Image 1 (cartoon, helix red, strand yellow):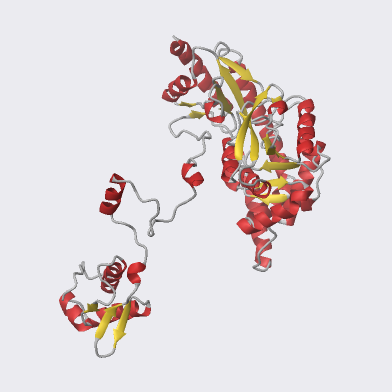
Image 2 (cartoon, rainbow, N blue to C red):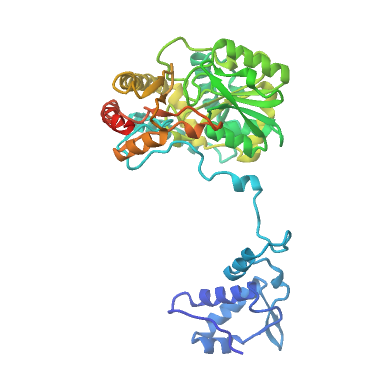
Length: 492
């Protein structure tokens, strides 16, 4: 009996025949034990050379799809019909029209329900392609980065690696970079740590994941700030924790509202995300006392502490910690650029070995070329120079933003003036709403972003987050002057 095989053109004839025969076997159209035509007959039927059909049969025989019986011919191998295969669209449509059985032997692989419910994109501001003046938060000005200096650091790292052996490296990161980070933290943040206490990660989110995996069990309570950082919420949820939002006030996290059985507390004490106020010293001490009584772990995310514009620096929780409770997390995404994907964590001493094991199991270690280049960039003093220059630029942008919010925009906005960081939050006055202001601004090619995505509670005071890390001072002036002309009409 002839087999229906469609051959198109004269290109890859053996491949076309092979793929169609293999598909017929796997889909059950060619049942086990079916006798196939001889290679000579098949070649005649398809109008190809016998060598082509011989090559196809030899490949299917070697892969176990066919069996050759001396004197009898070539047959489809038995048992392949047991292979699970994707159901046809007609079968899927029929199944969806009726109640599916609770168990099915050929069900497709499924993720845990938690991952099916997880949003594909976390609710963080993303730059709008249509906006010429964009106040997106958490983004730096890459145009100001000294790429010529960075290129020299990368070339140095390449030469260093060329002289070394091809081996797996330390899961905690390259020693030179860990040393540079420990020196930087000791000098700039009063966080005393040995280089061996520092773990290099692929951004702050990776650091959160490592700490969560070694501290949280399924069903444990993790407390986060409300409003707060959505990726932290997603990270702890993915670890199996029950995430409880805790309100913040003018002094930061309200410690008295923490759930009594919380196993982990995530805070941004230097520059609360997204509102911007620092946690008071009294509240920091209260949080440390609370955690010590309960044996809870505190994750301190110091995400943009480098840019302080007024007031004295507040003591990091890590520098006040005497009981080994605080995992201090930082990132270079806000000082260099997010694509670098380098962050760090200084865990409590009791978590050093578990975090090392978790990192080694997950991906062993990050890119050593980038780490070696960044170590040179820091140890040579170039990182400090870059920070000083960016501090002046961001200070000027912050001042321009504040002039507008406290000037022509004062009837519509109540800014929460931060002492540090590269974004500023401002509450909206009635009758304006977040959605209406964001939409009207977008029509004018201005990218604005509401505070609603950062709140877990239903009732939240409307407001906007103005990022000034990636918008020039002239663009701030132009955009907010135009916004001041739009809002009165919008309010009416």
